[in-house]
Length: 284
Image: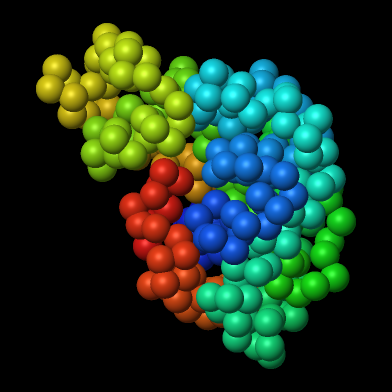
């Protein structure tokens, strides 16, 4: 039950978080801080909770990106925009985006209760082995309610993402192989190659490795073993995300969903978050 709840709530939480990547208001805040270009903004603002990390640490934490791709930004970006500045820019940009697209959230009478539930969820998470989630959880809780909502959504989405990495690494997969398995289900290859920095040669080599393991068929589709592994990875990700959900009631989770899902749908309808997207979150 808690695994199902974690998966269901992930969709609106992820959608709220993703405004930081896709909206002009968020990108403008990043650029105003000195983060010129989409990917410099993405890499720096996502890595900033970890401090002034280099390529190796970011590659390990992000998992699905080519190291050479991240090296275009790290570690040199920290000489231009320190992590603290990047954190301020991402919060300012996310708040501006949410205020633009879902302005009613700020005044909704349900928001204080929802923030209380989300904070209790974040406080209940066991953070061992969850570097991005733990780094976000360690940040100061914002006083602005919309900033707090975005920060809570970000903390819980990074917790889930860390767990997804744990799940596929435990099955002997690397980040690129996980992308190739996903592509065999949803045809996301053309979306993922430019958005994660891998080359055609890298992709072909990963596909060859999965074929040798009996996970991909010769034509690129999943074998029965591959389908079973994909289903296991999704189920295991939900299970690993579920730890804190037993700390709140089903009624509280329902009230969180009642507030956040309409907001996520409005963000999707406005194009603030595109579907499909590299993150893989479905439409809310």
